[in-house]
Structure formats: structure tokens, C-alpha cells
Image (cartoon, rainbow, N blue to C red; front, top):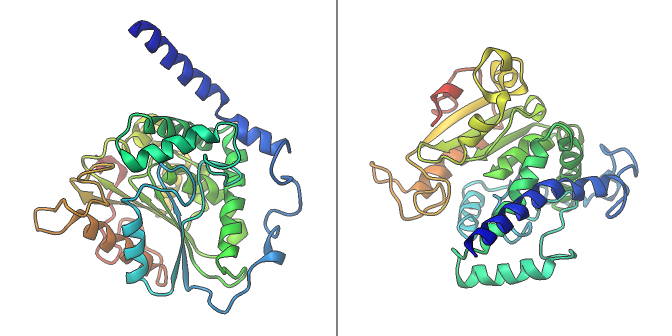
Length: 338
């Protein structure tokens, strides 16, 4: 019986991996969603932009980790952090309605064939945040991260998500042509999606575009070269974020990979690595944990908040230079990561 369960689980993983790109390819083929060829992607939504007098001086688009079900249904430990950022950064608009694991921004509980399954899992999460069924969400979204990083399917996936981010920016009052800075803040798999969409979003925004990775798993994506800067925040006990360095050959510090987008961006001074401390990836001791404390007594939550708000504050000043401190935030080379 156990053997059959193991075989079934392996078969399910194989099927999930094979079918992961189908949603992106189906959208690209025009089987569902908007017509991908409908107009110039740079100006596609500018005519329907919501022009308001309350435009922010900075926009943060939050891309949650692989535990998210929809753009608005994200792990509850992350919400207080976003509220705290908004409180400390008056005038900053924080966007939380983008689901980074779908080319059409369609959450798992929306109009999908298996939406009823995801709704049951979502209800279970309220009762038991550690339920085993939640790993189905993680696995499903993990494969979408892999699609984003894939050189074959990634461009299709990333242009779709970039267009959804652009749409959301306009919905929240972003003024095209205003040169207002935009920050992509991605957690876990959201870090890779932030890098992936940058290739296309940079042209749409045509304004300062930075990314903050909170324990993000990031490949050597060409989008890194389109970002003004990537700040990667990591904990020394976070083995998940370290997968980016271990899994993707373009990040290996070997002679054959020195011309990859990661190392080219690093040589251009576009990447800053910031060690937060003995943080884990999620749960206790994570960057969002309000109970765990550093040796100096500072909460993990407050340390992350301090660093993130300081980074966002630098967006209005001169971009950081290679290997130089950024308002007290020391640049750390890739080889020094956990």
C-alpha cells in the first residue's frame, strides 16, 4: 500500500511538471484570456489608465511566495509587514492584488477546472495553517516558478505576468510617463518572478524599476539586466533561498558562467546582497516573525522592516555603486551567501 502511494505521488509530480507550461502556452495561443497580440504591449493599457490626483510617489508591487492561492489570499504572516511598510513610508502605494503564479492573474480559487479543490484547501488553511494539503499549493506554484526561469517557456510566462502587473499599477493610479519609481518586492518564488518580468515591465513603466527579494529563489534571468537594482535579503538559516545559487548554473561561480546575466548584472553594480541574520525561510525565525529576536534584542520583523524601508528610501537618491555601502547596508558578494 505504501509503495502504491509513493508511486502515485511520484506520478503526480511528473504530470504536474510536464503540464506546468500549458497555462502559459494556452494563453499565448489565444485559447483563453485576452489576445496576446492585441496592441503594443508597452502602451496597451495606457488609454484606460485610472488617472487620479492621488498618485503615489513610489509604488511597491508585492509578489507573495509559493504558498499564495490568489493575489489577495497570501499567508497571513506577511500582511502585518506590508501594513507596517505603508505606515513607515507615507505616499507609497503598496499593491497586493497580483498573483505571480498565473499569466492571467487568475487565482487558484477563481474560474479554474479544479477551483473547488483549491477552495477546500483554502478553507483548511484557516483551520490548520500547517495542514499537509497546503503542500499541493506549494508544489503547483513551485512549478510555475520553474516555468518563469525556463529559457524556453519563461519569456511567454513573464510577459503575461508583466502585463498583469502593469494593469494593476494603472488600476492603483500609476501615471504613465510620470517617472514614478516602481519596486517589485518578491518573497520566495516571487523573487524569480520579479526578475523574470523585468525584461518587459521595464519598457512598460519606463521609470526607475528596482526589485527587493525577501529570501527569493532567483535564477540568472536576463531581466536582472533590465532592473536598476536588485536587493537580495537573506537569512543564514534559509536554505530555500540558497537554492537559487545551487540549482541554476548561471549563478555558479565557475569560469563558464561568468558571462551569464547574473554575473554581468553583478559586475554592473546592479546586485546587492544583504544578510539579515540567522533567519529561516518561513514560520518561526523568518523575516516576518514578530516573536523571534536577534542577539541585540531587535525582532526579526523589525529588522526586515528597517532594511526594506531604508532600501525604498534610497530610490530617491543616487543609485548605489558597486561594492559600496547603501545607506549603511553593506554589499556582500555572492560567494559570501549562506
